[in-house]
Image (cartoon, rainbow, N blue to C red; front, side):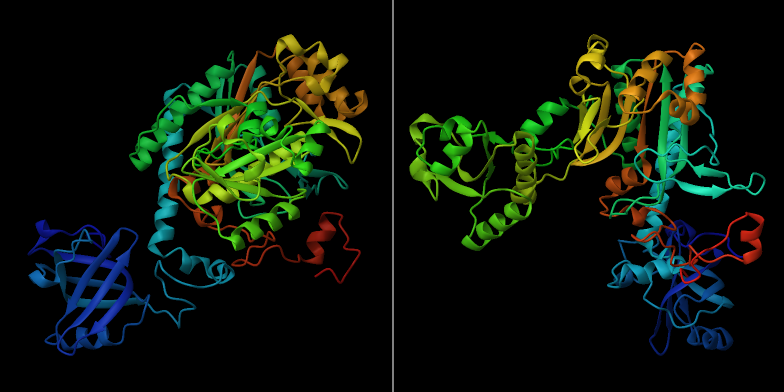
Length: 576
């Protein structure tokens, strides 16, 4: 028997009992007369004591190295009062070792297996199995498991059916590049790994499965950032005979359940909602961070006729003047750094003034009539521009820059709704979907598809948490003729529509019900629940930002014979 208990299980209730433990050696302290061993597994730590009276066991204990795997037999006793550790669940007891076996040895470690380490992330990824032994990493993976379990339990209790969709599917490139898989049986043809199960879940609605969900792997061959991976996990769900309120309400209740079960934290639902248009005006972002309470201020009227030439000229050109307040004072160096930031972001310049004790100070003070406005105390930064949307976006970046230190630490959820259905691609001179082409427009705006498609608002919704897009969804188009019209607007001719999306159009034609859904970035959800800045720390075996797997050394070259079977030939032999 390798163990009767785990290393986090023994308490004062077990005093006097004989036990068997197995685990990894965290630390060995040889105090001359006694040897103390910290034994660890994923459940916790137990202190072992080896006494010199047991000579063979004592000699084995002296030879132990860090991360050796050992098995011990011994008796539980109470620790001396001065050695009790209240921070450990096993802190009241220790195990007096009677027998010790080394199950496996470990060479010199590349880093210490502790939570607080200062090493390059690439080193951690190269030695991922050692990195995953750290308690913090094990906690992350365990919380991920509990979160996944809670999602499944909630959705199952709500009548959802978990249905798996194919990984080897048809390439329908939209946005990111597809990962392609060559077919051995059909030379020259390729499968694609799915970027999402979007089309399949809509087909499932047409098949009559009115409540579907899946915890699914998705694949996107895109340029990576801190919060992106080429393969990632998604909570995907779809419902028939629902409107937007139904989807949003169910999502809120799911998160309420998950946060309660996993973090024992109560969320306040329903979450606030804001339109895309108002989000840009108030926060300068379609992903507003509500942990920052300050909103963007419109100073256009204040500086109209003020005599400050730069701002007046912009106003006369039908531009806009916007301000952002911070409650603190700023040094001259900090203000200069902010000015440089605005210029680098494409702004024309940054101006400022300060309100203190009902008095104005600073660069713009003499151009403002304090008696005509009501402003809180603080430092105000002002930008202006002829391009109103671009100026709002710049003000949003400025807001986050000057107010970041005043964030609250709560979970600030927000629904952003009513996005434009289309946007103009200036580089390619064409209309393209703002999110994706399967979003239903509001019924009273369908006529605008012919007249002015860029004015059409879609039934699209994003869930934002502290400035991070956590989930995105929409009510879908469920009629073939409307779906084909939208495809036509974005430049897909009849032949392309049939070739790429024929199987979806067919499902819509044969009695597809009204339906809608949402998809969560599961890795990101877990990271934010834990307050972690990178999703790589909640994934057991993540890729680097260049999409490499450092531990197993992927991607890699393959044998010529494998390529031959797939009818593939490498043209450039220097690629490796």
